[in-house]
Length: 311
Image 1 (spheres, helix red, strand yellow):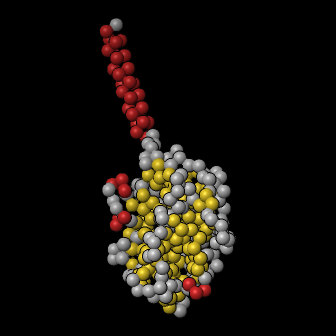
Image 2 (cartoon, rainbow, N blue to C red):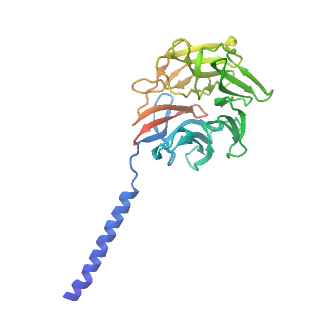
Image 3 (cartoon, rainbow, N blue to C red):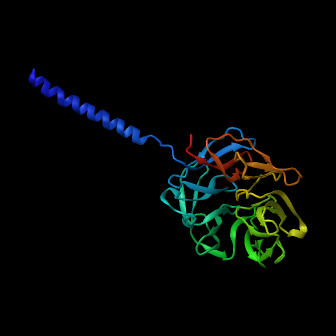
């Protein structure tokens, strides 16, 4: 009897330990809810919202931008959970299905060239507008004065913000003619600040941007002709509270989407050809929409930021 117990007890103890270790490992492997920013996807009407991409250990992400063929997504991010600040921001790219995430190095607000071979972006230090290859090589500074660059859909121009004559203005750099043009005449811009992530119209003739007015410190969402204020300029939204610094222009050209600081926080859309106030898009997600937004190249979906613990 004693010999039997001597054999059974160790076997039972070993089985118990294996079960405990297996259970412990199973619990450790379970995904934990983490308060971070993720990319979600929904239709323009706000239907079928779903998680689109989680950027591994980059908990702060924004400025999404697809290649024209829709195969890759670029964005920026930093490890806020490790105490990193914006100064540590990195440029990341992934396949459109979220796979093969890569870090290309320091930089913010990446924007693809139409052919997807190069990326223009803002570099925090040394500050300025930089162009690099899509794999992160061959970085070239094109203007140390600039911030918030966007490549035009026709590939000919890059637009970004500079300070000129004591005011903020948009500079359009014609890559073909090697010519730089300010859209507001020097010193005549109504804005003390122009913010990043402006967007081009699909025909490359207009830009949509956010600016802080010198006269009353309110914030405009406006469009301006690439030929300058004299050729066309229109304010579509004005508020004391600044909307989020990102805008998306529909590939068909009839809608612009952005995120004002409303409660609840929702994306809004407006037609730049009409004189109607922006309307909210009813998207129901578990978390807070934080504003970074872009269209998929086919115009069927919005990709946007949501902060929260996930679903």
